[in-house]
Length: 278
Length: 179
Image (cartoon, rainbow over all chains, first blue to last red; front, side):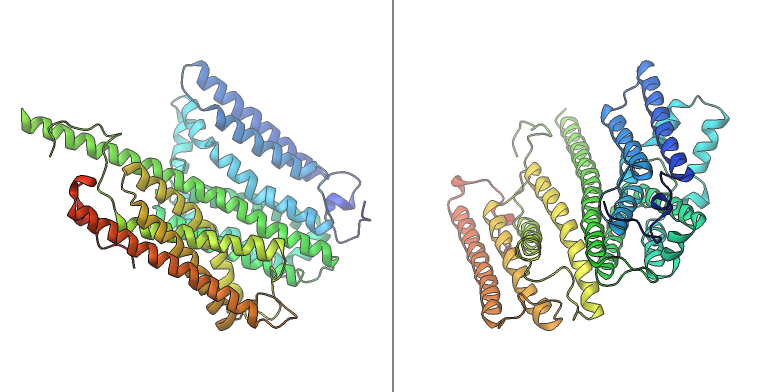
């Protein structure tokens, strides 16, 4: 066990996980229970809802809870980076693949609650927040601000900025993943080129930031060199892993859409020929 | 045109040599980039994750190149799957494209990244000349293999045109690919 210094997060300063961490873990577990209950209800009334989505959401909830209260491996910076990867990238991807908004829309009875959720998803501000380049700027731009200004050192000293930054990382990660994957009924269904281009730009910016952390720590912090480098490499290769998963999601969408379009065109052609013969 | 209407699943499209070459060139370039990263960065650790002498633009280009390689690998494999599904994959052209991509990337990396931008060198603390020669000649060799396969693919097409019984129709569509 490495001795804990003052410049590690509240997680390490106090003996156990703090209140915010415990609340996060509880929220993750509650959300998972709610999701599984909703999916079960849908199936009981005879609707199809793939089991894989239940698994995605449960894994996302478990990962988020682990990142909040579990013991994370490695030195202080590596542990922080593990937490950051799970909260900002892995958990959002797992949640988005489970399509929670689609599930909510299907399980809610027609009425004000359902109408309000749909209005929210289709609202102007939501459309602006889910513009792919805007989400990338919020997500990766936020990371540049976090690691290249004094903000990171501040979050290591004070609780409120620490909590706010983690809320931002989770929210921005969710928005980015939602916008790039486009699996939910949202206001503007952006095309493949914009979403793929955004993924490329965001992935590039993430990789450059990870490399710069390998060379120089965030201002105002002093981590052991080995810890800093392991953390930076974790960010680099962990980012790759999630990026490839996002790219595969986009590619599968394109592949099935092209297949459907082709089948449709062939059907049309065939019925035209049958009509010509008759 | 045949009387019988084929079902959508079995209906084949004419081969697309140009698309087959291009898609496999993308896969080849991405595979070579991945090999570079895995063998030289991670297993041998000859050149590093971040080389301190790097200018800013080199770092940026490297980050974009790295991300582009991953996305290209995924996109290339799905485009290849699509060509196969349509029955439009022209195999001889596909192989030539794959080698053209492998060699093209290696030569680009060897000349632009190593020498022009000087993002990193193959090895440090030794005379880099033999490594540079081996790397660039290796790339050139792969590129030449790709060019040879492209010529062979076109010769095969011409033969099919002269003896159309041997292959599918639509010979005109098969020509014009390759370098």
